[in-house]
Amino acid sequence: MRGSGKLITFEGIEGCGKTTQVDLVCRFVEKRGLPLLRTREPGGTRIGAEIRKMLLDPQNRNLADAAELLLYAADRAQHVQEEIVPALERGAVVLCDRYTDATLAYQGFGRGLDRPMIETLNRMATGGVCPALTLFIDVPVTVGLARARQRNHQDGVADTEGRFEEEAVSFHTRVREGYLALTASEPARVKRVDGNRSPEETHQQILSLIEPLLVN
Ligand code: TMP
Image 1 (tube, rainbow, N blue to C red):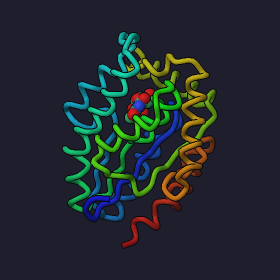
Image 2: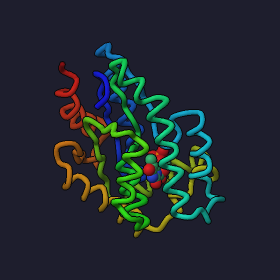
Image 3: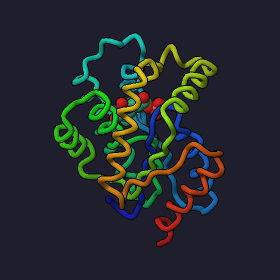
């Protein structure tokens, strides 16, 4: 950790309900009157927003796996330096929608890239800034993908941000298995939350995990 703030990250497959849960936790932290930064990867900075467009544009179907990995690392390096470290230093609760575990799950387990190499890149990009808590919101792959595709078509973002939703079910299954493996390997930091319930029930489970961290 850096400074007196707390970095809390939210992870999961497409359509797991992360955005809704980050919204609910934001409201909770605001009500407590604590300083807050809500952010996301990729795209938490102006430069990152440019990188996000490249990464998620379905027209970039031929993006090389190594290029994809390096773009996520570049987005993260910028984000940590420009947003996350300053927020932690001013004592903020930082709620981040995806972080280093997403690269291990998607590029490592999903694409099959070398995991020790990803860990090295993660260390370089973060300068060692590690989450105090990571919430893995778990839903069955079929449930998550159905939700994500419906949402993307409703919101009209499928044409600009649909590159991962186009991946096969087997890819998303490997990503989910990756998150389960990360949960098992770092049980003190990564907590599995059941996302296949009502948003309010999921929120209550998340609050029970977050509250101890907010007590100084
Ligand atoms: P989002 O839709 O949750 O904002 O995430 C954008 C996509 O980027 C999502 O499909 C997961 C993917 N992703 C990776 O593949 N690797 C990463 O390191 C991150 C942060 C996201």
